[in-house]
Amino acid sequence: MQIVQTSDNWLSKEAIFKHLDELAENTYTDRTVYLAANFRENNSVTPKIAGPVIEAVVNEVGSSDTGMVLFRREEELTVIEPPLPFTMDAIMQDQDTLLLEDVFEVPKTVAVILVRLGRYAVALMEGQELIDTKTEGRQMKNRHKAGGSSQRRFERSRERLIRELYDKVCEVSRRILEPKIQDIDYLFLGGEKHTLNGFKKRCGFIEKFDGKVMSRLINVDEPNSEALKLLSGEIYKSRVRVFKTVR
Image 1 (cartoon, rainbow, N blue to C red):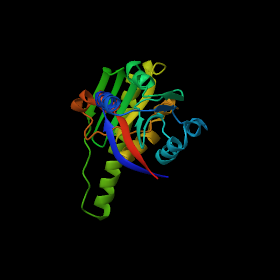
Image 2 (cartoon, rainbow, N blue to C red; image 1 turned 45 degrees about the vertical axis):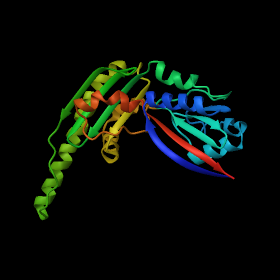
Image 3 (cartoon, helix red, strand yellow; image 1 turned 30 degrees about the vertical axis):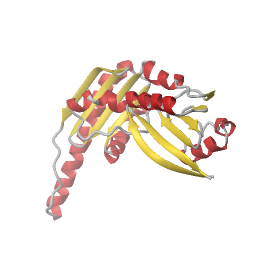
Image 4 (tube, rainbow, N blue to C red; image 1 turned 135 degrees about the vertical axis):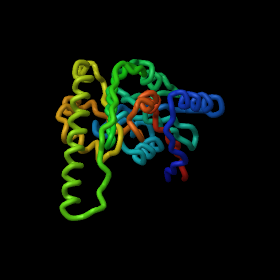
C-alpha cells in the first residue's frame, strides 16, 4: 500500500469547519482518530489500533507538538494539525469534530514574540483577543561593501545593534509577559529563524516558558501594528493535508 499526499494547506478555523461540513454532506467518514500532542514521543499505540491505513498515514506525516486529527473516508484521509495541542487520544465512529472544536472554543492565554532585524512586537492574547501589545522599530545598519578595517568596524557595530535589539525585546517581553506567566498556556515566536535563534540564546527569560514554546514559527514580514491586527488569524491557522491510498 502506497500513501500519496494530494494537498497541503494552512486554513483558518472558519475554512476548516466549512470544508468538514462539505465533506459530511457529500461523503461518508467512517472513522475519526485524535492523537495527542507528541504522541510518538509518548509511545502512543492509537495509530496501530486505528488500523493499517491510518498507521501508514501517521508514519508519513510524523509527530506533531500539537497532535492531529484524521478523518478516514474510503480511499482518502484528511489530516488536520491544530494550532494548539490536543491533550488526549480518541477513536470515534463517523465524523466527530468535538475535540477539534474545543481547541478553538476553550479560551487559552497565548504569548507572542515577533522579531526581525530592525523591528519587534510582543503580544499577550486571551483567546483570540489582544490584551497587551508593544511594537517598535530599531535602527539597523545595512551590509557594508568596503573591506579591511572599515568592514570590521561595520561588523562590530552591526553586532552591537543586534545585541541591543535582542536585549530590548527581552526587556519588553519580561515587562509584558512575566506578570501573567503562570496563566500563559503557550508561547509562539515569529520572524526569521536565524534571528530568533540568536534572540533565544541571548534572552534567558524565554527559558521560563519551558514546555510551552510552540515549534511552529509565525510567518511575519514586518512585526508592526498591522501584523498585530492579523495575529489572531495567523496563530489559529491549522495545517490541513489530504492523502490517498494506492494499492
